[in-house]
Length: 538
Ligand SMILES: *[C@@H]1O[C@H](CO)[C@@H](O)[C@H](O)[C@H]1NC(C)=O
Ligand SMILES: *[C@@H]1O[C@H](CO)[C@@H](O)[C@H](O)[C@H]1NC(C)=O
Ligand SMILES: *[C@@H]1O[C@H](CO)[C@@H](O)[C@H](O)[C@H]1NC(C)=O
Ligand SMILES: *[C@@H]1O[C@H](CO)[C@@H](O)[C@H](O)[C@H]1NC(C)=O
Ligand SMILES: *[C@@H]1O[C@H](CO)[C@@H](O)[C@H](O)[C@H]1NC(C)=O
Ligand SMILES: *[C@@H]1O[C@H](CO)[C@@H](O)[C@H](O)[C@H]1NC(C)=O
Ligand SMILES: *[C@@H]1O[C@H](CO)[C@@H](O)[C@H](O)[C@H]1NC(C)=O
Ligand SMILES: *[C@@H]1O[C@H](CO)[C@@H](O)[C@H](O)[C@H]1NC(C)=O
Ligand SMILES: *[C@@H]1O[C@H](CO)[C@@H](O)[C@H](O)[C@H]1NC(C)=O
Ligand SMILES: *[C@@H]1O[C@H](CO)[C@@H](O)[C@H](O)[C@H]1NC(C)=O
Ligand SMILES: *[C@@H]1O[C@H](CO)[C@@H](O)[C@H](O)[C@H]1NC(C)=O
Picture (cartoon, rainbow, N blue to C red):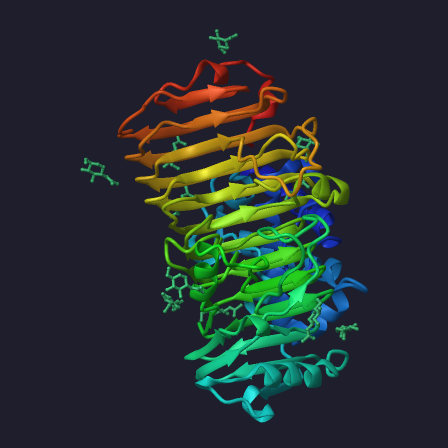
C-alpha cells in the first residue's frame, strides 16, 4: 500500500512537472516538451494529462475547439483544467485500483503498455476539428467537377472571398464529390480545405498553371534547375491555423507529365510540390490521399507546429523524387500513421543546401516520425539529409515498417554541407527485404554551384538506434562517415538482422560508438566504450 502511494506521488509530481514543462509550449494539443532531461516518460505523462484535459474541456465547459485555439496564445486555461484532471486522476486511482496510469508514466522506452485507445499521439487537440464559422462549397463559386474544366480561377476566387472571414471565426471551403481540375492556388489563415468523400482535385497539365516563384533562400536556387521553381499545386506562405483534410478525398498531382520532362531532360525549372507551406505555423494535414506529386509531396519549410496524420501518399515506384513528406528547416513536426509508397524517401528531414543553408542557419528540430509504413525500391524509409546545412537535431523515428526498399533509415551528407545532425533516436523498426537496412553515406557530390566550401564538413553526433529487426536484407549496415569529420556517438542496442543474403559483415568507416545485443556482430568501430550516458535510452 505504501509502495503504491509512493508511486502515486511520484506520478503526480511527474505529471505536474510535465504540465509545467508543456503548458507554455503546447499548441493544438501537440506536446512538445521543453524540459530536457525527462524526455520519454514525460512525453507519455504529458500526453495523458493533455488527453484528459481535452476531455474535460469539452465535457465541463462546452468550450469550442476554435475558441480554445484562439485563447491558447493569449492565456491558458490549463492550470485550472489540470487541477480537475488531477482530481479525476486521483479518484480514478482510488476507485479502480488500477496501476495503468502508473505504467504509462513509468514506461520509458516502450509505448506498447498503452492500449490502442490511448495510443501516443500528438493530435489530441485535433481529435475535434476546429469549426469554422463560414463554410462554402467550391460549387458556390461556379466550380465544375467534370474532370476537364479548369477551376484555377474558381479556387483562387473562393479563397480570396473566404479570406475575409479569417478574423471572424474562420472559413472552410468544401470540395464535393467530383473531379476538380485546377492549377496552383494559395491557401489563407484560419482556413480549412475539406475534401468530401469521392472528391478528387486534379493538378493541371498546363505548366503555366504552376507559375514560377523565387527559389528558397536556404537552397539559393531551384533544387533541380538554376533560378526560380514552379510553385506547388497547393501553396501557403506566412499562414497560421490551416487544416487540409476530408473524408479520404484525393489530391492527384498528375505528375507524369513532370516526370517525363525530368526523364527527357527537357525540364526548364524545378518541379513543384503537391503541397508546400512556407513560414507557416499550426498546420494539420490529415485523412486524405495524395497521389502522383510532380516532386516532393508535402513540403513544410520554415514552419512550426505541423501535424501530418492518417495520410496515404502514393506515387509510382519509379517516379523520380516523389518523396512523401519532407520537413525542411522546420520545428515541432509530427508525422504519424501514414502509409507511403513512392519513388523516393517516404520521409526525408532536411534543412537547406551547402553555403545557402549554412548562411540561413534554420535547423529542423523536434520532429517525431511515428507509425509510418511503406516501400520505396530505390530510396529510404526515413532519410536525414542530404540537404542538412542548417542543422538537424532532436528527431525521433519510431514504429517504422519498411519493406522491399533500398534502405530503412539513412543519414546522407557530404563535404560542403556544413551543419550538423545530432540527437537522432530511432526505435522499433521492422524491415523486410530491405537492401541496406541502416546506412550512413557521404559523397553524393551534389552541390548548388561551385561556390561550395570543401572545408565545411558536417558534424554527426548522437544517433541512438534500438529495437530493430530486419529480415532478408542484402547487406549488413553500411556506415560511412567523413574522413575529416568522423561520425560519433553512434549507439545501437537490440538490432537483429536475420537472413542477410550477400554481405553479412558490417562496413564501417570514420564512425565510432557502441553496440549491445547486436546481430550479426557489428564492426569494431562500434565496440568503443563511450560514456554510458551518451547511449542511455531512458
Ligand atoms: C525533442 O522533441 C520532442 C518533440 O518531438 C519534444 O517533446 C522534446 O521536448 C524535445 N527535446 C528537447 C531536449 O528539446
Ligand atoms: C486568425 O484567428 C485568430 C483568432 O481568431 C485571430 O487572432 C487572427 O487575427 C486571425 N488571423 C487572420 C490572418 O485572420
Ligand atoms: C501565391 O503566393 C505566392 C507567394 O507565396 C505568390 O508568388 C503568388 O503570386 C500567389 N499566387 C496567387 C494566385 O495569388
Ligand atoms: C483512403 O483511400 C486510399 C486510396 O483509395 C486507400 O488505400 C486507403 O485505405 C483509404 N484510407 C482509409 C482510411 O479509408
Ligand atoms: C518524353 O519522351 C517520350 C518518349 O521518349 C515522349 O513520349 C513524351 O511525350 C516526352 N514527354 C515530354 C513531356 O516531353
Ligand atoms: C480522421 O478520420 C477519423 C476516422 O473517420 C476520424 O475519427 C478523425 O477525427 C479524422 N481526423 C481528422 C483530423 O480529420
Ligand atoms: C513496433 O512498430 C510496429 C509497427 O511497425 C507496431 O505494430 C508495434 O506495436 C511496435 N512495437 C512496439 C514495442 O511498440
Ligand atoms: C543532444 O542531447 C544532449 C543530451 O541530452 C544535449 O546535451 C545536447 O545539447 C543535444 N544537442 C543538440 C544539438 O540538440
Ligand atoms: C528487440 O527489438 C524487437 C523489435 O522491436 C522487439 O520485438 C524485442 O522485444 C526487443 N527485445 C528486447 C529485449 O527489448
Ligand atoms: C526470407 O527468406 C526466406 C528464405 O528465402 C523465406 O522463407 C522467408 O519467407 C523470407 N522472409 C521474409 C520476411 O521475406
Ligand atoms: C568495453 O567494456 C566491456 C565491459 O563493459 C569490456 O568487456 C570491453 O573490453 C571494453 N572494451 C574496450 C574497447 O574498452
